[in-house]
Image 1 (tube, rainbow, N blue to C red):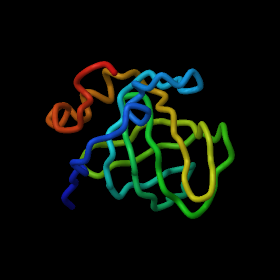
Image 2 (image 1 turned 135 degrees about the vertical axis):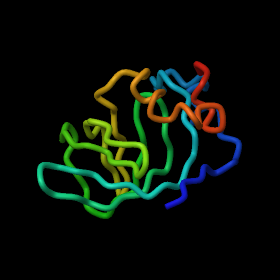
Image 3 (image 1 turned 90 degrees about the horizontal axis):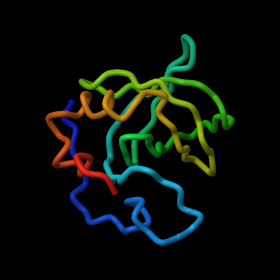
Image 4 (image 1 turned 135 degrees about the horizontal axis):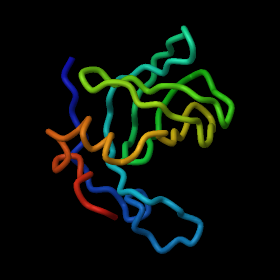
Amino acid sequence: MTQTSVDTDISEAEAGEGNDPGDHRNFRRRSVLWPAQLLIGQHSFTCQIWNLSLGGARVRIDLPFQEGTSLRLVIADRGEIPSVVAWSVEGSMGLKFQVGKNVVREMFKDRLHVLGLDEAP
C-alpha cells in the first residue's frame, strides 16, 4: 500500500503558527490522506488520517469515540502509536499521541522533510 502526502500549503492556523490565542498546538501539522486502523482492545476500526503532527493526528471515522478513550493508531509500514481521543466531532476525531515526539520522528524519519515535521512551528 502506497502512502502519499497531499502537497498543499497549509494555513498558519493548521500549522500551529497562527496568532489565535485559542490555538494551543505545539507542533506543525501536515495534511495527508492515509488509510489507517484504530485499535481498541481486540477491536479494529478503519479510519483515514487527514492531518498529522509530531504530537497527534486528525482522523476521519464514522463511529465516534468518547473523549479520553485510549487506543492505538496503526499506520501501515510505520507501526502503532498509542493515543488518546482529545476531541470528537461529526465524523472526525483529534488524537493526542501518548509517545514523545522523538518516537514519532523515528517512525517517519525517511519522510520528515516531505511531511514538514522536521522543524518546530
